[in-house]
Length: 169
Image (cartoon, rainbow, N blue to C red; front, side, top):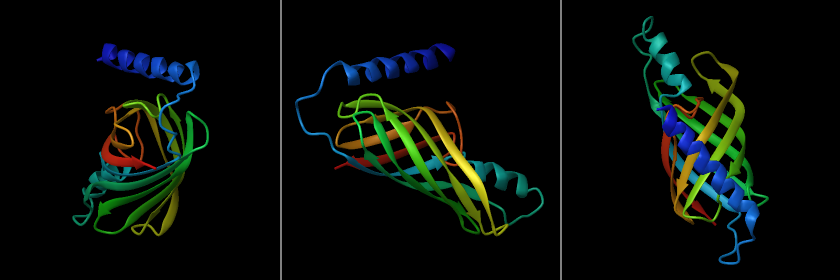
């Protein structure tokens, strides 16, 4: 398993270095990105599993995320993530993000992403700091893409992994 993760990181950094190698002359860079993902094994999934020991009403079925990004350089992207945990009572998360793209505009784009924000839980009526760090994710296709995070690279409110579709425009 370690060999797989090492190989995945090597592919990321090789593609990352290609971004600096030459300026691409084909289609213009799409600056905006919009995607929708289903998140598996989120922080709220684990919290509801623990809460279900004491409360039969506590259950969670993952989360749904809407993600917007704006590319302000060839490799850097910023934006925000809105996350809705599918539970008996609403749990919503809003997280600004920063992302490093390894091969934006290519058919395979490895990326790293950091999301940090707050979660509002109607269970507790509190705002809780929340985040997510993707050590290695892949975006396959351009401008319409299939996106996912390599499972268990790192974890947060968007889950141990997520799957989704996105478009760049």
